[in-house]
Image (cartoon, rainbow, N blue to C red; front, side):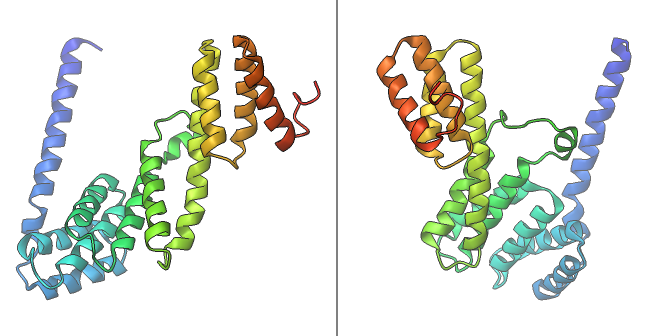
Amino acid sequence: MDKLTIKTLFLALILTIVGCSSSDDTEVDKVPDKSAQALFTDAREALDSGLYKKAIQILSAIDSRFPYGPISHQVQLDLIYSYYKSGDSAQGIALADRFLRLNPNHANIDYVYYMRALMNISTEENLFQDLAGIDRSDRDPTASREAFNDLKTIINEYPQSKYAADARKRMLDIKSRLAKYELAVARFYLKREAYASAANRGRYIVKYYNPSLEVEQALEIMIECYDKMGLDDLKSNAMQVLAANYPNNRLVGG
């Protein structure tokens, strides 16, 4: 492909993006001029029908035209949900951040934490990679950590929340994801003979992600690294922990 063709395609892509952005900016103006309550009824009908993008247009119009109305908070909550259902996590998280900042004592604050967690979790998901069977454990886990913190907030600060039970289940899944990430990093260091860094990652897994399936492998990495560095006492301690918790491990009694 020559440079002219590449440049033409690039310009076409920019024009397409700009065109979409301009179209998005005018969507709110297309919403009929009705009262806040009438528009809210239309938005709820769209939500009930699964028309989330239409709901976003209407709710955004209400939020813009009636920012301090009696239903403004509910409009924003419905907007967060609509962004989540439409797959626009970035917009949903931004709105959730704003809501939490401006309404820290709202009665439905646990719901906002929960929805922000779900949206952060959704950013970790990639259908194509899942279908291809690609291991994603070495990807940056920032979104998972943020989701974990939000779920932890629900459990610690709002233990009676109807979202608390599901929050606990999701925290276990995220904990495993984070442990896998740390294990991938430990193996990366081990492969490059950065034994101190690898051992530290292994120790971090044992300290913060126990119990999990990754702890046994973390102990194995620690033992190998301490052996390579000639740190016999630390190797012995790690071996004792491995033997006590995983007596059938290949290194025990070997």
